[in-house]
Image (cartoon, rainbow, N blue to C red; front, side, top):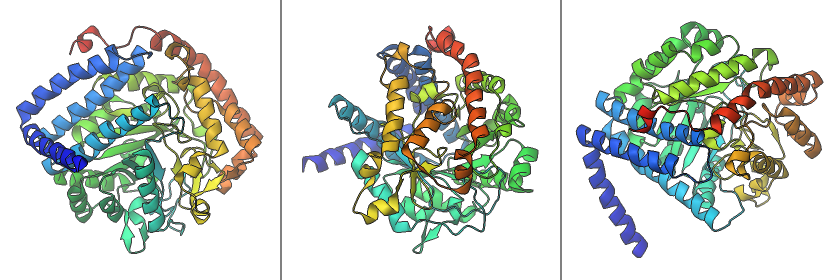
Length: 487
């Protein structure tokens, strides 16, 4: 009874607050007040932390506030979608989920509570991109049943108080199972906020109209730079289809992001100011994820990776972009913002389930010990997956490297990835645990001595460049100017 009364009281406060936030000048005033509060709590009052990392976390949240206000003023974010985002994402994911994990930590609970799951319900895709991590194409018939995907979301919401779900692929908008699709999944699980990676070519007015009604779904659309590089990898005409999807989503007030793969030939373009101004300021991307090419999947090769010197320059540019107000995050270089590697189901992290049900520590570690279909057939649950020896080994490495150490003793979190930045550690782990590759490319890579030696050499050169940056800039006094600190 008391819980019901409390919920009704919260709902009343929320409704009143949203009406107030709809007024531009009041919202702007409140955002400025929130910025000062965030700076104090995230940076100045943070305990046992590295100031530079905390400043970047502050910038990320501040940028979300700025972008929300800007898109509401321009009409790129509808008020109806904004209201649902506040209820589901801001309240559920950013407040209640984080508070739950903190309560578990203070109680001394050792069992991990992941923040989210990445799940790819299908390998089917209408494109066939070179270097695709999932080796997806239109010929694949591998998909998970709707009831299994729905159960996964039910369990992680119930077990870990997790209300954030990431969908990848394949192309999620091509998934059909038991008469339902990806939008039906978001509608059924309306207390979860869905971030869905897509090539964007199947987003039309009908899809956008339904997304606007749902309000708990944001598409992340893949680009490789401007038209030449995007069409070179994704097929002629793809760039124009993506721009059309952007336009439709803006018209319906649906927030969307971009997903970018930086390779040796395009890293300079996708980290340029021209790129940022076009996709964020002109086309209206709400946020963006910058993934450096990982040598896994179709036609994997070390030659396509950005080199150590280029990665350092990417780091420099990304820090400047974040400071300037762009929600554009370099997935590896900004490891300090997430306190390191998120893989293996750590608290605040995630793990990955693919279209066969194979359960992996990360999208970019294509090796497994468990399969969710087998776990369910044996009467198990997601919690049984978290107890996997592979996951436990990765979580132990995370603790030994950074998470379990005082801030100033942590390893270099600009190099957070065990399979890419500390490959020798992961290679040894995979061999000792006799893991199963999840596809032929992973099987080939596991037995490829030159591949492993090449990555180990890459890590050595990268460490020589980035370790001094970590010691001097992240263990120092911070990176933001006095003018920005005083906002």
